[in-house]
Length: 366
Image (cartoon, rainbow, N blue to C red; front, side, top):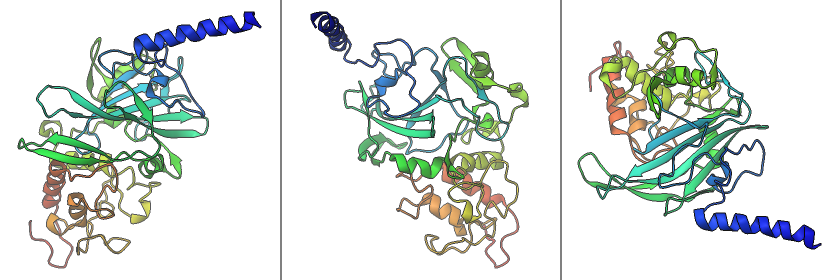
């Protein structure tokens, strides 16, 4: 009837006008939208994690930015992390592992590269969401358009060419690869369950510059109700920043680097558990860290015999695979197309300080 049709048309017309004026229907409501089962929004704006405007990553109400002491290397990309939880819910603190997050939690990580024209701007490439749904954690990759106004869900995204300015001022072409939904599991799976990687006490225990001032992240999450059971930051574990010598000694910084770049696979329950190489920060057994340990599978070792040769990083498979950019040979296997020179130097310097060798003459310093 006319009475049924007119209101519907009027509402549609209002929504259409809003879209024309704002360029998006994703920010029609001021609250973050929660999705705990399929179908998930085809557009990033559908989640309403960010408010519309000239700055595409301005967090919406309740969306909290965070950072890690030592982050994963991703071809020198800048990363911006955010967390959102449904009202009245909190994550449960864990001293060693990832926090236990409530149903509906959204972890968002955006990857961007500085423009090479000196403008100070950045090109946003992708935003990955990790969502705690009814069936467990689900990874959703959203790829940003050239106008930097919206990102679209692409479960199998094509590689993107990126140009970055290297430390020496030269321009470097990167074939930036966005992992597909299945590849996300390669890093995030533990005992066949998908889990977050970064949000652990030792990674979050640092100060962050929030809009309302600087605060320790663990204390801030507790203050806003996003974390329960956390002790004082002074008594919580903390890893150093790998690139800040003032934050920890050489061994601690190298192990922090391996913890966040390698241990998500190389740990009990990880996809590389069978390798026998366990690279978690709290690991103290040098054998499990690779010392004089032969690889469990042949190939991709560069002709080297041991994962780590104490005192001789040049003969260590670990360094060979960190330096490589060849498929199946490089480590990590996904998430990068470049070798992280600075990170490799750090680990190399630490391995050079280890004593003992492997009893076969391979003890000379590099």
